[in-house]
Image 1: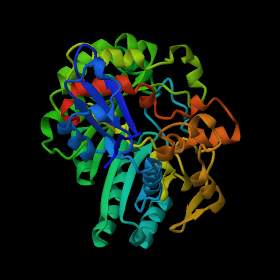
Image 2: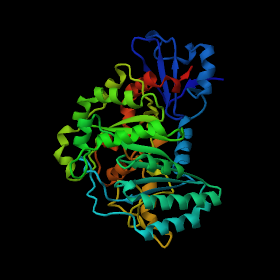
Image 3: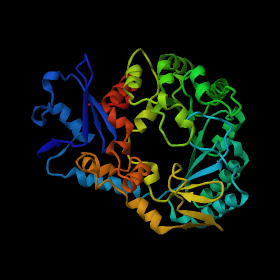
Image 4: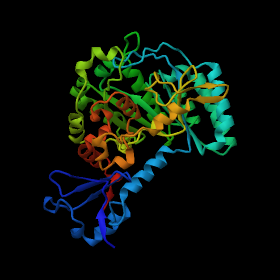
Length: 439
């Protein structure tokens, strides 16, 4: 059988070694070949040793020459978009105890209304049968300001799913300030297994960018909460993603921050790390710090690649997966404290419906428009090898704005990690070599 390398392969060479890293974007698999010298690049299918060929085929890096992989990309895209799961992002509180300097929200509303709680429960009872599972992302504001509402909804959802033999899981995006030991234990009982917590570098940089509303520091309280979880919670089911929003100030102190988190949490694989530039989502606050925004993540990945860091980077690997925003999936809704329904938490100026009397009253045209969006009119996207997988939906919010007000295609943000894929793969190989398949 005639064979070829997958068109979805990406290759990068580790400097000063004979190691070639491979990443297949269709299958989200990573592998490495040794020894491969620069003389052997680019790879030719005719020169691959037979002992390597079997494993390359087994893991999809090599495929039959007769197949059109774009069809597989289209198929994967449709499977991701046409989800049979029910996904709710629920804003239990639209208030916040922090005054983050880059936040776009003015937090004019408080906690979720009792009527919205009951409507969510009623909807789940009436409709869970048409879904294969239910997933909830607790969001805000700061969702833990309304813990009792979160607990009430969790108990009801879990009971509904148990009675109908549906799987239930949850995640939470929290600033971590209120995530004390007792709260964490209770959230675990309610199957909240993923926690996204932002720490913006060292105490100095974090407290400057993420203070309390009264200006007080937050770093030490969050770290104490995390230490308590680390030391006293034995469960291995959860994952805490420590997200760091990079500004010029954070970048200057990144080495010190990495030393700190490695010392504190580096030996605990329940903690993983994600680094992101601060994005301009609008609002008045971002204007005051615009000069601190970074244009490139190159220096971040260079710092990660230096030294002897040993951190669990599975969250970074997860960001590479398929490059389709989770809010592009059908049956995925964001519900705010008043029962307004959106298709993305960053698009609250574009509601598509309302939760009323236990029903999702959705504007079908607005929903259909959202799901039908693609980058088919953008020449740079159509010529991309990965177009069949993502179709421009790595950020549907940006795709929406692009269709309304044409802008630079680079602003679609088609996976910030893709722009630095060579650097990302080297960081992942250095820190988490076990996630790469030896080919």
